Image: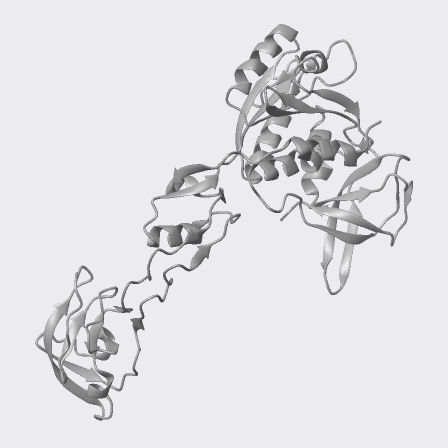
Length: 401
């Protein structure tokens, strides 16, 4: 029997980041940055007005009582291509984002004036630098603004666009094909015949793939015919960075995944010392990492969390590949099988200062879908533990994060 540690080590050894690509900004969202982004120049290149208003010398309006009237000698729209020169005892009407004229050291907002166009009445004093964004306020030339390894989001795209970057070099989101196998499987929404079950795995696993930051394609259900399954897998490998096959994995004569995949590439199938989901398959087929997960939806989801998700995070270029974990005290006792690692759906509560509690949901020996749906963690019981007592602390993988 293979340990969870050994199986995971084989998975991570085969997982490699997807080669980086230069993509347009809109396609970079959600991807991991594969370069360091530096500013080629000061942003803004010169001092600009932070608000619509009047550029003045602070000394020309300071100390003149309640109001001061100044002639408006020029307009400076945001499209101004050169900085104007402000003469003393005057004002220039400026738009937000327009260059602040030489000689001006502040901008008076419109709501503190009478909005005059030929002459303007300024009410109250204004301080030097008020409502002015200085040169390099957002970035200085040569400054590193985005580090390699950052997951590109809205604020990072704003930085790149402000620098004039139309493209970024990123690790693209891995393309994952999720394939379910079994003659008994029926697409949800269709009539369920006698002996049939609805295909829950591809929907759940595709959603999990997308939550991980990858792109998912659902295929199937595919029947147990070996020839058809070979053809479908061959077709899907062309477009997949990673393939997940679920179902058809038991040792009985009716389940064909092992027969089809075992001769391909480096695929191997093992009894892994874990529950649920003891039988697992992994390897590479035509260079594509390929997982074979159990068909039971709870076992498939646990297998995804323990093995597939870390591989996908690695392939996507993420520095943090594992879910956060914490230790929590069990609120109730439960039994665990000897010699295997048990993953139990649970609800964890508490805080770092008060400590954490975890409640196992349902029957820990036979977790049901409703238990997994209500869980926010997987409590992990080690191979050498057969009884978890109330108050014992166990590691928990936090799912809602």
